[in-house]
Length: 220
Image 1 (cartoon, helix red, strand yellow):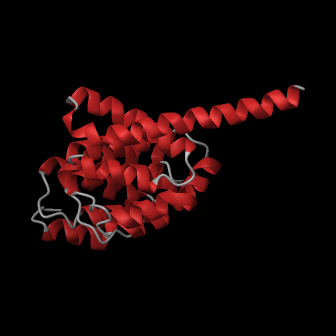
Image 2 (cartoon, rainbow, N blue to C red):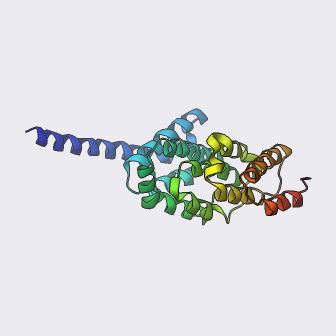
Image 3 (cartoon, rainbow, N blue to C red):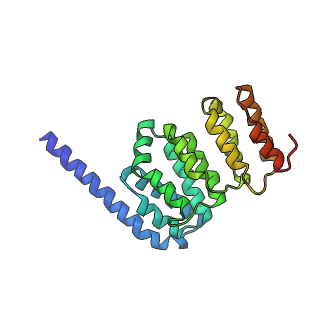
């Protein structure tokens, strides 16, 4: 008897989630009319609902991307980072292989809309939560241009918990990527210089990165 109750309870839970998901999908049609505060709440709940309970939410996320503006998409990326960072490595691997890798590939290729330079500042934070998938993640993003002005949090995060020490190659690749930006402020240059010095203390050859810094007009 207890096993039957458990079975029916699980079925009821799945049905309830499906009902809620359908409600949110219908609400997408009115998303653009919501206040900024309500949009933020909607995005947070939407991301949590579809990315943690749906095997492949790409279609659902695409509907949101089409109705949202750049700030909304940045908020979604920020929420996704928080969700990924809170997951076990095993769970992250499952999500990466089931749909997240494809989602990133789609966005890089303008499906349904390309990552903006500002949005990439938030998306780049995912590298800290992707575990063994970070190399592939960096490779996927590499063709795009990011705005260095939005990479300050990312650069500071590299130093936290000595992440760069465990990810020397990935750190160099991300610095090279950031240095492709059209304009780089002195604040960002300071952060980059600091990380270069940390890498060199670990025995890394950063000559090409320093050359890129100089080519951008920064004395090194």
